[in-house]
Amino acid sequence: MSLLDHPDRLHEHVSAFRAAHPRADVRARFGASVTALLDRRPDAVAVTADLMHATGLAGLKERHPDRLINVGIAEQNLTGVAAGLAACGKLPVVCGYAAFLTLRAVEQAKVDCAYNELKVILCGLASGLSYGVGGPTHQTYEDIAIMRAIPNMIVVAPSDPVELDHALQAAAEHPAGTPIYLRLGRGPEHVFTRPGDPFAIGRAARLTEGRDVCLVAHGAMVMECLLAADLLRPEGIAAEVLNMHTVKPVDRGAILAAAAHVRAMVVVEEHSVIGGLGAAVLEVLERGHAFPILRIGVEDAYPPIGPTPELRESLGLSGPRIADRVRALL
Image (cartoon, rainbow, N blue to C red; front, side):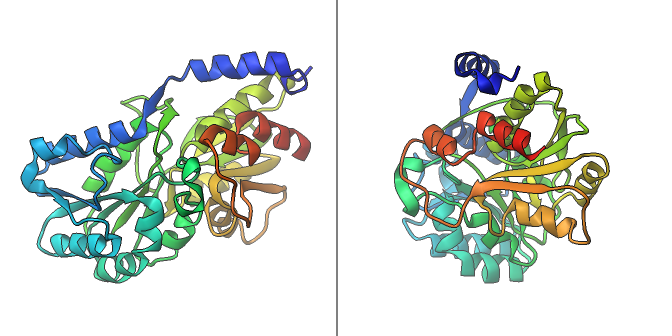
């Protein structure tokens, strides 16, 4: 009998699964990660748009006062200044909200950074629905579609606060000549990544094995897919979970390898279903596939305003709702 058919047992199981993966604050981890990067790299500079506290960088002012630049609430100027720093041999880490960094400053990201082949790490925090109470001005569900359409732009969406560390370090070590957009959350998120887990830009991580369905996700949705796989296992449904933390360049090999042995594929993203990870997966499989593909994400409408967990649940972006969709699909 499926847990999905027994609300009380389902609630207990979900609560236990989440409790086994304690949460950590994204902003605090980001601030610590940027500080550690500046400790290691004398050429690294943090640049922000008056968001020191909101991005966890408040302590950086005392530790590296000469390498924290606040341009004020001016994201276009922020990105242009970062490009200038990169042209002078610095490693700029741009710290801002994803909604403003990708929408207000898209021209500077394209022309100043990508076109000029400059190494700028663009960190967009509060992405997806992680700032759900901020409404459509602060919710960000189109940033991946925007940024991955820019030539010479890498797009990475870490799955939890520990993988955030890995992604920032990998971005700093990546060969020069391309800007990198890191899509990050805001509040506490569940942690399942271990400090020693391997991480490489452009290479997905297979977290579980299964021959029935492949769940492809990035960001906080990876945790929800792990929960969905756990709920489906007692029913005899084996789900492979792919952490596709790099959306561009997407790991074609991992997608094609999964496509060779599963009965269905489900892409889950806290982003619009238009132009995001689901679109990237379909582009890999554009020559045809012999199984159904379901994309779960933000439909072509503005989500409501509210707390992040409730928003995710209402939009079908929770483990139990994903498991329901998978069961129906199969």
